[in-house]
Length: 249
Length: 312
Ligand SMILES: Cc1cc2nc3c(=O)[nH]c(=O)nc-3n(C[C@H](O)[C@H](O)[C@H](O)COP(=O)(O)OP(=O)(O)OC[C@H]3O[C@@H](n4cnc5c(N)ncnc54)[C@H](O)[C@@H]3O)c2cc1C
Ligand SMILES: Nc1ncnc2c1ncn2[C@@H]1O[C@H](COP(=O)(O)O)[C@@H](O)[C@H]1O
View 1: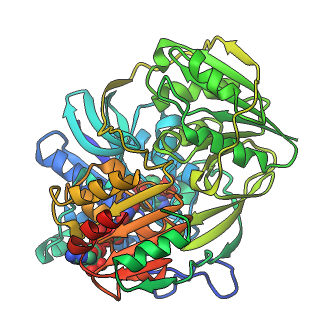
View 2: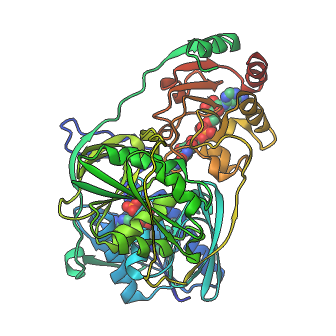
View 3: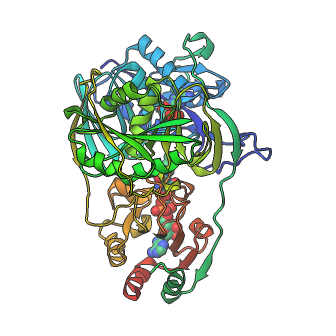
């Protein structure tokens, strides 16, 4: 195939313990470390490996987000992507709008595969890939842990609740990544320098000409109910006694 | 009035427990009428089980060879063809529902409400975001169908004392051929199912190898418990992926969860928020898992597990 499109969403780093703003109006993101969504890093790694095997010729990374998402796209270019597209939007976009943006880019670029994460770890939505496949009228292989390409088809192993499912899909198609697909490479300093010269195209969302979907109104943010710290027991006998007290054994 | 269509999850023979939990969630909507949809190759057995679930008005059954395996691209257009007249379309937050429902939502032109944990009103729901660090209340547009997945750990299954009518339908939508099932490999065992078990014994990176993980299996077998694991244990290949508990694995709510050699990363804890009693066994007294454990024991698992097994 010629091209692979990869989604790179800018999200709060997974090591940050996010908190609700004291006035409940949202999540505290000021001064918080931002990164590429971990599942998207896996998607990019997979796209690069497909290209390195000679099964694709160009890897294009796409982010829909604020101007600062250029940082994540530059990291993607340093990892090895050929070029980057930022669809700039100061406000976060909902998954259906994201899917419509990807569909517009699909129409322009005609990729053989779109590789997205299975979920963005900020909203934990797990929707955009399936939605893109739906409105594109193409196959979806979600939660992938193995992707093999045979010309115009791909065989994908998927992590499902009861084990591993394998499906065959015609290309072009959407594949979303699970954790076990690969381990993303580290970027090296010279690659960061090289990445500065790679093309990064910026288009405001409003100029793309896609109809935005109705996002859900975010009515309230609150911290979860905290579990209380319980008792410590000294030994196995103490543990068994505590379990018996609760009627659990 | 809320008219709800719930997409039944099954393996061709048995209705998955997750469906009865979706019914429980739908029951929390104001003034509901609930239909179940069974898409199957030969679905009469599953439809019969579905018809027994309390609060179900009727079961709608579409039998088609193409429905033998739950391929989202094949099922979604059949659901969309039936969607007219329903205010809500629900599926479970299992890999089945997560794969399928967003495809349905997009075809209907709406965003999905993912992982409903509580119903606040006909269009208002609570759901966890940021690995459960934040609970968000969302309101879906009142004039559009609500497509949602239900966080099964938040609900208790409805009982099965009903005898709802089953209506067989023929579907005339053109189904895609571009997605084909090849195979399923499942580490299926005689042990209780992780998602519905009332007792779970779970092991982490500390087990060190697949061989050592046998200690966890032995303890679980003695207790009649299901086995779970942290991502680190799955990544290291000690156990298969379907045992992963957490943000990106299974969200479970057993009465008892024994976490052994698991540090308690936020991504893991989000999978066990609704557990009745959490027991933590860890050699590091400062491990974060102790902050949420109801009963904690500091010590070496290689010494503790055999002792515990003998004491039970
Ligand atoms: C996007 C993303 C998604 C993720 N999703 C999940 C998920 O769904 N589920 C999940 O679990 N993780 C998930 N993780 C990973 C998570 O962040 C942690 O890395 C993981 O949970 C750690 O697993 P662990 O507790 O087994 O290992 P560790 O953190 O290494 O903990 C091992 C523990 O064992 C203890 N120990 C060591 N030796 C012994 C002994 N002999 N006896 C007793 N105790 C001992 C140690 O003190 C330590 O506390 C995710 C991460 C990311 C980035
Ligand atoms: N704003 C965005 N920019 C780039 N990719 C995105 C964006 N939103 C969603 N995606 C892609 O879609 C996947 C699933 O997102 P979600 O449905 O929001 O959980 C992510 O892992 C990304 O690959």
